[in-house]
Every structure is written in C-alpha cells, then in structure tokens.
Amino acid sequence: MRILTILLCILCCGYSASAKKKVPVILVAGQSNADGRVPIADLPEELKTYRYCQWSYGSGNYETADGSFSLFSPRVAKPKMEASWGFDAVVYKKLEKLWKRPFYVIKQTMGGTAIDTSCKQSTNGWFWSYDAEKSLLKAFEQQIDDCLPNLPKNYDIECLIWHQGESDKKAADRYYDNLKAVIQHIREHLVQVTGKKKYRKLPIVCGTFSKDSRQGSQQVTDALYRLASEDKHFYVVDASDLPLLSDRLHFNAQGAQTLGQRVYDIMMEKKIIR
Image 1 (cartoon, one colour):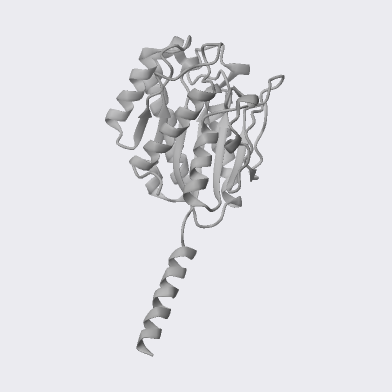
Image 2 (cartoon, one colour):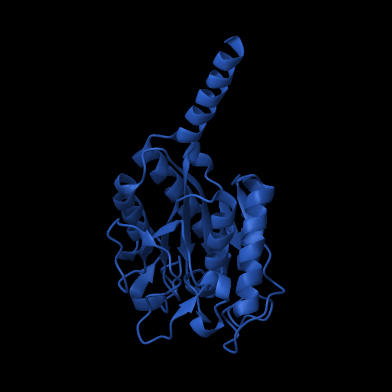
C-alpha cells in the first residue's frame, strides 16, 4: 500500500509540473532579412508545414496585426513581391522539434527601415525610433499589448530575435546609442505591461550581415559587438560568411538556413530555451 501511495505521489507531482509548464513566446523584429526575402520556390520541403507555431505578424502599414494568432506559414506582406521566407522559419521548425507543443511568435518586420530618423530613405517614413511620427517600435509594442490577452495565462517571453541595421548605414556612428535605446524601451515596456521585472534582462539574439552586403557597415557591426560586451543578455550571431541573393543584400536559401541554425544554436548554448 505504501509503495502504491508513493507511486501515486510521483505521478501527481509529474502531472502538476507538466500542467504548470510555461508556454514559450518568441519576439521577432527588424527589417528585410528578418522579414524574409528568399523566394518561396527555394523553400525546403521540411519548412512548408508547421504544427505548433502560432504567430502574429505585423509589417507597418503593409499589414497591421490585430492581436490574434494563426498557424505559421512562411510569407511576407510586401506588396507586388513574390512570396518569400526568411531565416526565422528555420528557427520555428527547430523549436517545433524541440518542444513538440504549442508556442507563440509575435513578429513585426518591415524591409528598408532604419532606427535613426535622419535616414530619409527608410520605407514609407517608418522608423524604429519611438519618437518617429510613424514608429515601428510603437507598432510593435502595441502589437505585443494586443497579443498578451490572447496568450495562455502561463506564457513566458523567451527572447527577442532582432535583425536590422542595413538602413542605418548613413547614421552608423549613432547605431550603438539608437539600438541600445530600442532594446531598453522594449524591455521596460514588457516590465510595465506584464509586471515582471525579469524582462529587464530579456535575452536579445541579433544577427550580423554578410561581408558581401552592399548595405553592410562595419560601424553597425561593431555596435552590435559592443552591446554584447556590455550586456550579458545580448548575443550576436555572426553572418559575415553567409551567401546572398543576386541583389547583394538579402540572404539566399543557404544563407537563411545557416543563419536560422546559428540563431537556434546560440539560443540553446546560452540556455535561452530548453
């Protein structure tokens, strides 16, 4: 009888721990390489269907997120553009295989967008600056606010995956300060809306750029590594050796797959995810 009681206690404890398991949430933001520019014709077979990844996708005025989630399927919102995908699709597939249960992605990406408002070529006047009239940072934070009530109560925001900086090339000397301000704003916003102080240390996973990119900037790359040296929750993923499409700006299928694998690897290595 005693053995039976012990076994029942073990089973109950296991069930309780499973029931309390946090539901992961991943934030994704940035410009075109985060949005995805690899032609859908080059999408690997294993990335065509997803079972667990639920996402909310916003893209400035191209697509406004309403706080609802749907099953992830690789696509972008840019008008008059062939369907495409990015490195994040690889990350989601890896997470599906790891977790084998539902998780959520809140993504706000728009190609050609800068942080610094002096970069006048930023797409349709949208910027990642909170002070901009058309602010992607505000749109992203509003999207998060709208999504939170639609998440399971036991959600846990794991990290922000960020890839941006090409459009800040002309303001590269200010990129360190600008990106630091963006990250701080997002972290503090999460603390404010969730009441959880741990989000002041939200992990940030940030990719660099191909050495062959026509929009690459060593100053921007240096800023990323400087932030990583000062902030132990900021991680840089090297993409300098990755191949590009013929536009010499966007990762091709091989580059996107490799970057996705590297992002996932650092998330595992640094125990951002388990």
